[in-house]
Amino acid sequence: MILVSACLIGENCKYNGGNNYCAAVVDYLSDKPYISICPEVCGGLTTPRTPAEIINGAVIDKHGSDRSAAFASGAEEAALICNSLNIKLAILKEYSPSCGVNYIYDGSFSGQNISGSGITASLLRKNGVAVWSENDVVRNSSPRSLDGSR
Image 1: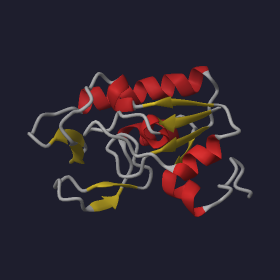
Image 2: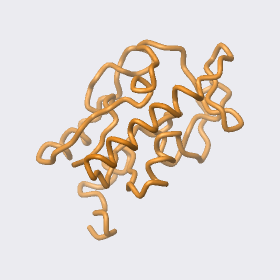
Image 3: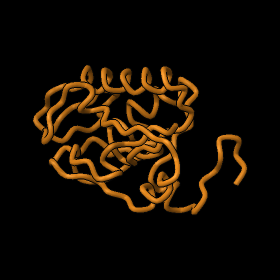
């Protein structure tokens, strides 16, 4: 079983009400069991919602409101799902303050990114879940298996 960011398979849960559909992810999942979630929605945030970025370790929306508790709650929900279903792989949306795997936005709301991980990606890694971004799937027709082989 694989956990996947719901926006990557076309669910309209992105902050602006849209999605981040990724054909490579959908193709990769076509013959695999998976469950999709949006940690931000699981944390109680609405769709659409004010965009948020990580600033000094806190998740702050564009209006200056601290949304850290909602993001932490959504991350905990994702971790509980992985634990209860023995999920060892998650494919998450790069750059997201929840799901960013290797990069997140820099906190300036200018579209610039920096090295870092989102709240959910970090917690899943701490819990032993391998975390890939959609870019890992796009770059590799067959992403690394959990043991690192191809």
